[in-house]
Amino acid sequence: MKFLSIFFFLLISSNALSAKGRDIYVIKVYHLADGKQERLVDDYLQHAYLPTLHKFNIKHIGVFKPIESTEKLTYVLIPFKSIEMYLQLESKLASDEAYQQLGKEYLNAAHDQPAYTRIETILLTAFDKSPTYHIPALTGPSEKRVYELRSYEGPSERLYKNKVDMFNNGDEVGLFMRLGFNAVFYGEVLAGSKMPNLMYLTTFENRKSRDEHWKKFEQDAYWKKLSSMPAYQHNVSHADITLLYPTTYSDF
Image (cartoon, rainbow, N blue to C red):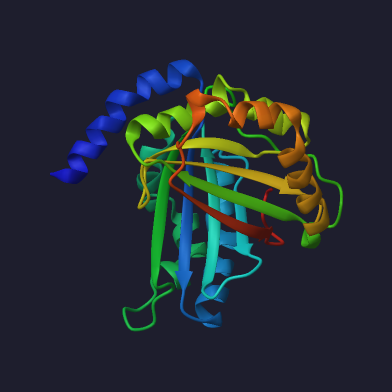
């Protein structure tokens, strides 16, 4: 019953989301026990999942791994142009014979030799101020790039919305753009394990560039003014910062 309620909520919301032209994002986080699971998931993503989504006209899928982590994780970012595309994906995959063949080792993994420990799924919709995703304008070696995924939880729904407003009407999105943070997306979390919550992904040529950008951000006059406004106080209760690098087969 709970699943049906979420399903119908998404269907009812779809017209409003589509009318605004805002992307839908899904972040899948694979929790992996060992190198064997990691290799199996990589092979599946590279040779079955991404090529099939490309065939379905889902053009850019990012696959990333943490630069530093005590746990083996693989992050997959999938952008959709509508909620309908997301809701239809699993049935399309189930009926695609080529995909079933390409991914058979992963898809048919035995219960005592699973492909992963668990999958965490986060569903988001893009901000009004940044309604579509962007391909980062990076030119350096991909193996040195840093992708920074930030998650900001709010102490209440009202204060969470206040932080979203800070990005939109307060033009924090514009500030990131002016300072060259190469943001891939900004999104409001519709469903996930941490809520209320917003997430965004910025990109840098390397770790040095990342640190320099944040130093400029902290010293920026507009940020100092915006962050000191009484209207935008106490709107983040917890922040998670995850530094990632792209896999060799990632579209980003």
